[in-house]
Length: 188
Image (cartoon, rainbow, N blue to C red; front, side, top):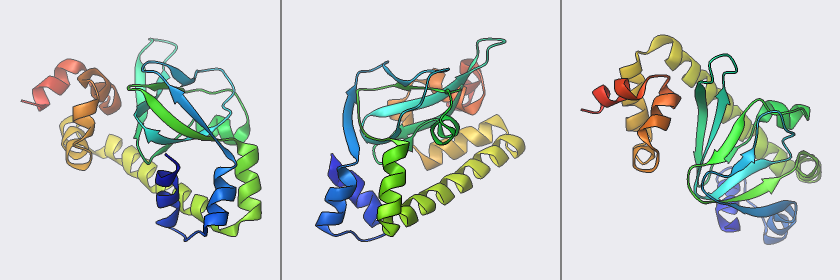
């Protein structure tokens, strides 16, 4: 479980065994069942979650029409939280729930700040991960602005084919911003 975290960190910066043990001591391990929430809308967000097993989704439900909009899927070796609420220590505007049974390593903001202050390597790691997240977010926004729904579908299929094996089509449709019927036309 923790080996996955070490592997991810060491893709960016090497660690000694004692450094990794120190880092890991700031995480807690949790397990969640399918359909269980890690974060619910309008609640505090205590952790950034590193997924070691399973699949989650982060979504926003429009209060006017009740429509669910999926912002992110996260599976093994991915991070997920409501970053706005986590970093600003405010209530969540997103919900994060389990599509499958999930195991995560949880990092509180306090512990994140502590290990970043104590180990420059980890501050460097999180900066690089944040930068990659900004790039991915910009790519997603530009895709929503410039690509047709079918082009977004084809891009998602090409980039993450395993997602289509693990996620119901209704959730993929919500991620792409199309109806289930429209998604069915693309997959024929």
